[in-house]
Amino acid sequence: MALTKRQKQVLDFLAEFIAENHYSPSFEEIARNMDLASVATVHKHLQVLQEKGYIERRFNRSRALEMTPKYYDEIRANRRKLSFVRQETDTLRMPLVGAIAAGQPLETYEDTESLSFAQFLGTDNVFALQVHGQSMVEDHILDGDYVLIEKTKRARNGEIVVALVQGAETTLKRFFQEGTMVRLQPANMEMDPIIVPAGDVEVQGRLLAVHRRYR
Image (cartoon, rainbow, N blue to C red; front, side):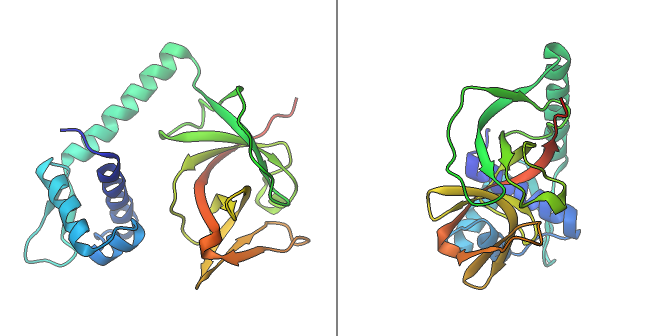
C-alpha cells in the first residue's frame, strides 16, 4: 500500500531522528516536530506505518520504534532508480523559480528557466534559487550563486533556510527560534539579523547545496 504525504513525512522524520540520535523519538517529540494535533494522532500514523511494514515496535521498552528492512530497501531502490535516470538522460534539471535575497528581503517570482544540479541532487522535492546580495558571504554563499533548496516547513536552529517573512518576502538566512521570536541571522558581520515574531515567519526550505558559475 502506498503512503500518504503525511505518512511519508512522519516516516522520514522517524528515520532521520533515529539515525542522528540512535534511539527513537517519543510520541510527544513526534507530535511537536510534525505539528500534529495530539499524541493520539501520532499513534494512528504509527499504527498505519507498522501495518504497512515500515516500522516495528519493541514492546516493554521505552523509545522502542525501529525502522524495518523494507524502509531501507525502498530507499536503496529509489537511489538506484535515480542513478538510472541520470545515466539515461545525462542531466537532471529543476525549475529556477526566482531570486532570493541575501541582503534585504526580496519578492520572489516565477520563471520558466531551469537549472541543472545533477551532481548535487540526492533527494526529491527540490528547487533552485539565485542569490542576490552579500549577507551570507561568511558562509561562502556569494551574490550570483545558485542554491539548491529542499522543500520543508521544519528547521533546526542554525540551519540555513529560505524563510517567508510577513507573508510576502523571502530571504536566505540561518534560522534560530528564540521563544516567541525568530532570528534570521546573516553571515556578514556588517549586517543586522532580522528578528520577527515566530508567526510572521514561514520556513519554505533548507539549503542542500551551493552552485557557483565562474564564467
